[in-house]
Image (tube, rainbow, N blue to C red; front, side):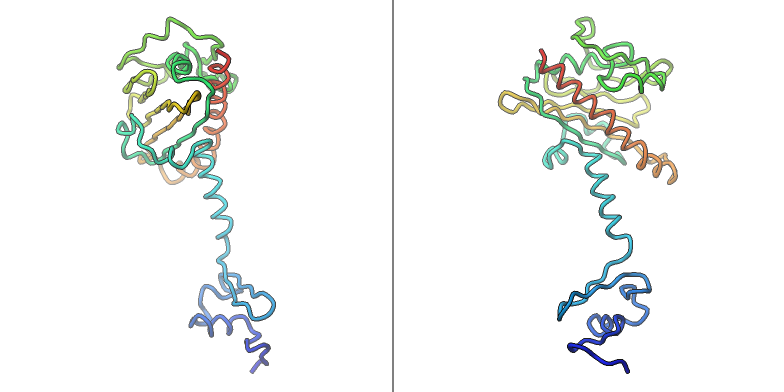
Length: 241
């Protein structure tokens, strides 16, 4: 029998068994599946499964990616247009504060689209994909008279998004023809400024596990890069007047 020190069995697995009622094959035992650590003195032994810290960090980074700029209440808030795709497998909610009233932001939203006002993001990336996006630096009057049912082109030869919700200057939502993607904009006044909330609702039910993994690892971060630039682009233009 091994000698004892400070009332604790020096051998880590016996200590865990004594304190947790486990067996030598318990998953918390160091050297089997988990890692156990005991501070100096009489502090209790703590055990951690391998990969748990990495998984937690990944979840936090992914949450930040999907909710960039949005407050907790904005992430959970029901927006006009959420009903367009209630069973979405992926929802992103991103937001920005714009020092301008909703009426000054609205014209920049309703003129967006391929062959229209662009998307105010990285045009060179959009055009590498053949989307024909050219971000306008001014309000384009001929694209302001938008109606429910109007189509917003995503690019040559691509499906269009149809206007489903139109409540000037507070809510604007479009949905792609196959109804697997809805894009919602909400403008919430806050004193002399506005919170612009952009929410994407995407169906993932038809994706294979490999496709879902690819989407999570590459498409989600990519969407943040592009949408962040878009929100900043709208902010810059609306504040400039």
